[in-house]
Image (cartoon, rainbow, N blue to C red; front, side, top):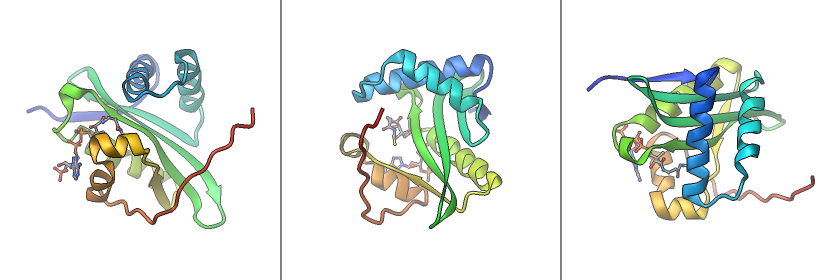
Length: 151
Ligand SMILES: CC(C)(COP(=O)(O)OP(=O)(O)OC[C@H]1O[C@@H](n2cnc3c(N)ncnc32)[C@H](O)[C@@H]1OP(=O)(O)O)[C@@H](O)C(=O)NCCC(=O)NCCS
């Protein structure tokens, strides 16, 4: 089996990343409009504190990861895995592991002390995500995330 390559999503790979993220959002039932996804991918890809990368199987994009970073009193710079998606037919071959490994490496190189992820209840039920992330070195402290829309 040939190796999976992880590449930042610039140029034509930005379109591939956008297509994968659109598919991810539709499959998981997130209501974000596709033009908003495309615009935010463009903004994140142009911003040095954010990272979007795709996994290439030969030349086909089969997975995507996004990382957003911010400064906190508790952690200094903190990286958050915002999105992680692998095409159904490419799962179970280490693609997500490779994407996460590259995301952690990028975060460390940028100066992050910690990388986190939020797991939605739907994704936890569908993919046993806590176990998945724990297997890959994350630990869940029981914190919960609240959001309030302000714009
Ligand atoms: C979750 C998802 C990203 C996994 O992708 P994948 O490419 O099949 O995962 P991998 O094959 O890279 O698995 C990586 C490792 O985790 C292990 N693993 C996979 N699922 C696991 C689980 N439920 N519990 C424990 N370990 C698990 C694998 O065995 C592998 O271990 P290894 O590196 O020791 O061999 C994929 O199913 C997906 O895209 N789901 C829909 C989107 C989603 O929910 N994303 C998460 C949003 S936060």
